Each structure stands twice: as C-alpha cells, then as structure tokens.
Image 1 (cartoon, rainbow, N blue to C red):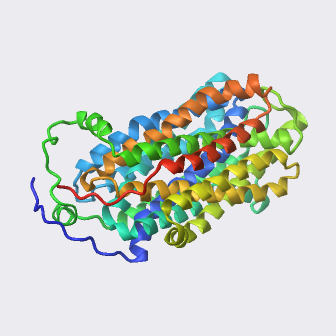
Image 2: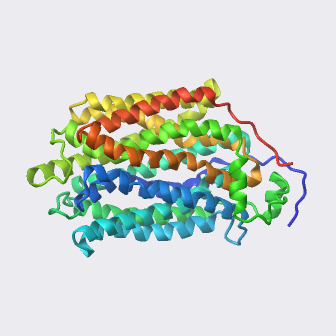
Image 3: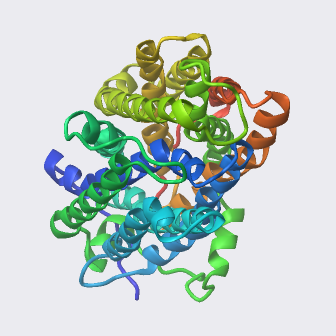
Length: 457
C-alpha cells in the first residue's frame, strides 16, 4: 500500500480529545499502583526472603523487554476497523485483569512454596499483559499530536497516570479505614483489604480502557499518510528482522536519553521493591531480618505496608499536579533543564527517607519523588518523539523501553545481594542507593540534546 508523499501538518486536538486518548492509561497505572505498593508485601506473605524480592520482580522488566518492541512493531503494522493501537489495549487489559484477581489469591488456592511459585507466575502474567496494553499508548499520543502539542499530550497522560496510581496505592488503606475491612491476615495469607483492592482495581482497569477504545479517535490509513507521509519502504518484507535493524539505527537522542533512563529506572526499581521493608525497619523499628515477620511484628509490618500505599499515592498525586505544571516550566527553561531539575528533587526525596523516623514526615520525601516521577513519565518521551520518524513511532517507543527494562534487570540482580550482604538486611540503604542514582540521572542530562521533528523522506 502506497500513499502520497506530500504531508500536511496535523491539526491541533482539543483537551478532551487528548484526555480520551490517555484515559485508559489511568486504569493501567491503577494496576501498577496496586502492584508497586503490594507485590513485595504479598510475596513476603507467601514466604519470600528479603534477598529474593528483587529476583521475583525480574519478571516485570524481562517481559517488558520482550513484549514492548514486538507490540510496537505489530501495532505499527496493524490497521483494523477497531483502530491501529486499540486491539492491543483491549487484549492486554483482559489478560491483566485475570492476573490481578488471581495474584492475591495464590495462597488461598495453593499451599507453601506452591503459593509463592504461582504468585510469581501471576505477577509475570500481570506484567506481560500490562506491557501489551501500555506500549501503544505512547505511540498513540505521538501518532495524533503535532510537535507543539506533544509536551501537553504527555503531560495530560502523566496527570491521568497519577490519578490512577493514587487510587491503586490508596485502595487498601481506604478499604480498612473507610470500609472497615481487615488489614490483618493469618501467617501465609494476604489481608482482605489487599485482596478486595485488587478486585476493584481490575474493574477500574477494564472500565477506563473501554473509555479509550470507545471514544478515542485514530487516523485511518489514508488520513495517517496525509500527515505522516508514505510509510512504505524497502523494509516491508523484512519482518521481525526490522526490529533489529531499527535498533542499530536508533537516533542519537535515544542513546543519550538511554543513559538518563538507566540511572532513573535503577533508582525507581529500588524504591518499588524495598520501600515497605525499608520503612518498616527504619521508621517503625522492626528488626532487620531476612524472612517473614510473625506475631506483633507482623501486625506492625502490615501497618507499615498500608502506610507505604498512602505514601505511594501521595507521590503519584504530586506527579499528577506537577504534570499539569510541566508545560509552563518547559516554556521557561526547556525540556532538558526541566527534567534534570525534577530528577534532582527525586534523588533528594529518596535519600531523605533515611533520616526520617516519624511516618508522617515521610510525606515530604514523596514531594520530590512525585516531581521526578511526573517528569520521567513525560519529558523523555516528549524529547524523543521529535527525533523518531513518524512511521517508526511504535517500534522505537518499544525499543526505547530497553532503557527502562535493562536497569531494572541490573537492579534486580544486584540489589538483593547488596541488601543482604553489603547492608546487612537493612533495606533502607537500597532507597539511599536509588536516590544517588537519580542524581546521576540528572547529571547525565548534560549529554542530551532536545530532539527536533524528523520528517519521513
């Protein structure tokens, strides 16, 4: 299929049209919020040791590394009556909702090590499915928005991500403190407030995705060609080898942003895996052990876990608000400087948690982390989108995910032994390490040039 080479400038979209495009991402992030705040806690309930936690989390970056480039490649080639990206939104969501419901119930269906094994399996399915649903959202925004609106588009997407993550992070606490559902469970079981939170999260996830599928618009092939040019080239018959060819031809802006992403996501991974354990030990005074807590210590650990959900909700709430401010900051100092400043705030926020002994004061740490999170979700993609040929938007957004998954894999392999042998089971030092990685990410922005729009020739 060949289209006219003459391209027209894409029209500006209304705020509501941009919101519909990313509305489903709010549900995806609700699932992520539930996972980030509760997965380590659930796996520990099933019997995981502290040095094993990061290894179980390996499934997330490994599935992302495999799935996202493939989904990006196939979604670039897909034209259906439903749309170009929408079939992947819907398929990934259905499988993910199954995993969300199954994960906290593993101990109810299986016993002992089998519960841990199946819990890890459902976590892997959840991650793979989320990646299928999530990857095309970045490409959809880049497909439909012109260069002037891309920062706004990714900022609105980040705002909706923040709202979804707040809901996912706060659900266990809300069900206990508003709904009266117990946050305690026998040894080896998951508390009811967590289980019911996952049920509600699955319903919310599916509902928001359906909103995007029903109301967001995608260009048909002829209209897409009018705005992006002819995407037919000599690589049409290359098949999946095209992924490897494009990897070797990635823009320099992507490589330089890759270094920033490496440090950023290494730090984030440390935070997601070890915050519950770190705060339980450093702030709530639990002993630094490599195993499960029992008796009164288990009660304190569950209380700390609920508070971590609140803290994660706060940093996501901050990110939602900060995302709306990002376009104004960018207009004043530029995307590159905005991202560096935000990463510095995140690094300071993570490091400050080491010095805080009062749970409520940890809220202040979340402000800096939320600013960094908002920028990480928006600025690299806004910078990168202008450096990617339009016909390659999906595949390059998928390849860019390598710079998110590789640091998480490295962190997963190193963080467990570091906490156990270098930090003597004191998980708070993993958070401090993550903070310094954020600061290195900010320094790495020196080497990044803000991309310019590339036209397909």
